[in-house]
Image (cartoon, rainbow, N blue to C red; front, top):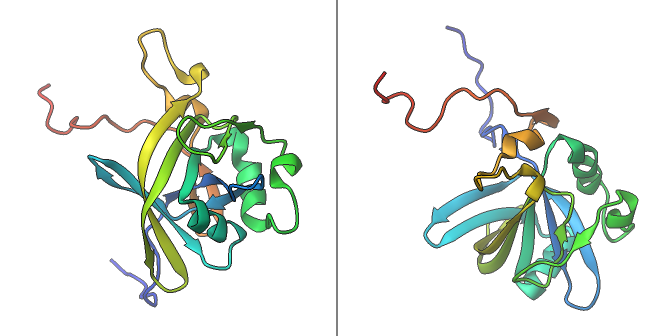
Length: 187
C-alpha cells in the first residue's frame, strides 16, 4: 500500500468546529470560531481551546478567564465560517450573523442561543505553546436546546447535524456507525 510522506504538522482531522463566545467584562462581547478544541478530563470536566495570541478574543479570555464553547449544527455553518474569517475588532459578528446573545448560567460571557449545546468554562491554566496559547478550562455549566431533548430526557445531538472541520472544509456528520461497546456486545 503506497503512502505519501508529509512534513510534520497538524493532521489530526476532522475536528469540531465551534463558536467561542467571550466578553471583556466591560460590555464588549465577541464570538469567534475555533477548530482546536477538545475534551481533556472527565472529573472534573475540563476542556481546552487553542487561540492565536493576536486574535481579538485572546485578550478578552485572558482578562476575564471565562468563555463559552457553543457547539454547532449544519444551520450554523455559515456563521462558523464568517466568525472565523472576520475580526471582532472590525465588525459586530453577533449582529452580522443575526446570532442571539443568551445569558449564561455561571459565567459573564454570553452563550449563542442558536447553539444546540453551550459549555460554560472558567480558565484554570494557560499554556503558551508557540503560535497558539492553550486555555485549559473547567466546565462549570452546560445548557442544551430543548428541541433536541425527548420526553425521557435523552439529548439527540445528531438531530442538529453536527459540523466537523478538516483541511479548510466543513462537513456535516450524520450516519451512526455504532454505539460505545457495540464491538464486544453479545449478539
